[in-house]
Amino acid sequence: MDSLNTLRLIGKEKTVYDYTKAHRLQDFPEIPKVVADLKISDAHYYKINSVLLRKCYEVLVPGQGLELLHFLKQKNLFSLLRHEMLFQDKKFTAGKGKAELEKFYLCCFHYLIDLPYKYYDKKLIGGFGKKYLDTKNNATSDVLYVRYHTMFADINRIAARKNPKKSVGITISELLKHEKELEGTKHYLATYYLYRSICSYYSFYDNQPAKVIEYLKKAMKLKDQIAGFFPIDISLFLQLLYADALFTNNEVGEAEQIYNKAFQAGVKENMYGYYFHCEQYALVSIIRGKYEQAKALLDKVFQPCIDNRLDIYATRGAMCYVKLYLSNSDLKNALSYLNLAKVINEKTFYLPFEVQLRVLENIYFFLKKDYEFSAQLASRNIKFLKAQEQTDIFENYLLLWKTITGMISCITKGQAMNTELVKDYEFLNARFTNLYCGLLEKLYAQTVKEI
Image 1 (cartoon, rainbow, N blue to C red):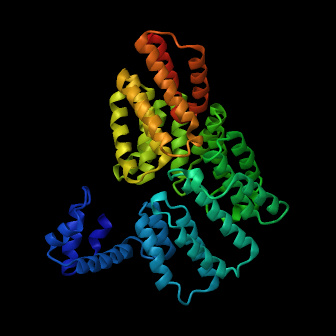
Image 2 (cartoon, rainbow, N blue to C red):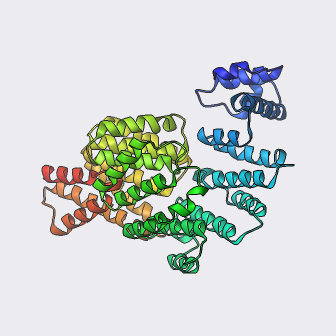
Image 3 (cartoon, rainbow, N blue to C red):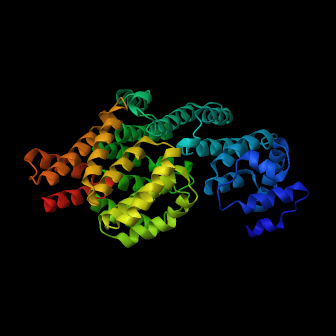
């Protein structure tokens, strides 16, 4: 904020600036109240804001251009980033050489395709992808790259919808057919993003961790051919992805070794999937009992996201705190972050997170020994999943809530768990160790103790 003190403001600009600054640490009032307080019209207010925004940019990022886009992305100012791309496309591209235009449009394409679900705009991505291709004369490799990178992003984003398998619009057999078509070609980037698409499909729609590892290894073999295309260390990025895949497959020790090495070397904020990798490393630390290490990472990376309600990043962080505090039996802090995560996810609904939150809430009340309410939640959650129409990808969650209900029944009746219930618990514990940090073991131990 200190650098903004040098702003030269005139007339109502100073009034609007001071008003905005005074409200920056609280919920900003609705526009009707703002314009009433400032005694100006809506149109005048928006015009002044536009002028103020440009003056702030000039102070914070004097060069503007791509530097400004990078600044806005780093600050997670996604609405402003989208607006600035459109502004620069309209105002700054005239008279630019082909090489500059190629760099600009490719940068915009990358930034747009990496936006969180709430801000994802497929039509805009397609528009900037086409403008990039126009600078490349629509060469075959570039056309295929744009096609498969967009498909990869779609597969990931659609996983956030209700009934995602119904919405994805492509099958694994089609993806494998595309693999055959690219086999033996030198369309390395297209092949890379096709492999990543297949990995995402097996992660989100078909739940085959071993297949994710298989296709990730294929993608890793392309690192030398594609390294020059990326502004980050693609080898380090692929190592992080590999650690993620191993972790998902419950190979926690091997994953921890890769994470330790990567984070000691330095994983920077510009790393693709930065928040996801940080979350996974924190979860590994929790499972290994390194609670202080996990908390330090969460405090550094995710608490600022939570404080600023940065949508999906904030929800990720809050849920990770819940898992940490449930693991070390700090139920008070677990509930605090659970409530925060629920509020944030209500505004930016992401189905996989909604399911996770329902599980964590069930675990919380179970560990609190409020068995009656925990049983009610399990019943309610089963109905919620069945209402999603396609429950196949959540089949294990249906079994999870039935198992929780079974454990509670054993506790309330004072009966030992039967063979089938124990077998279901063992299956679920192996399936969900990575995602829920072994918390099902705490439920099992508590059930045995209570009986």
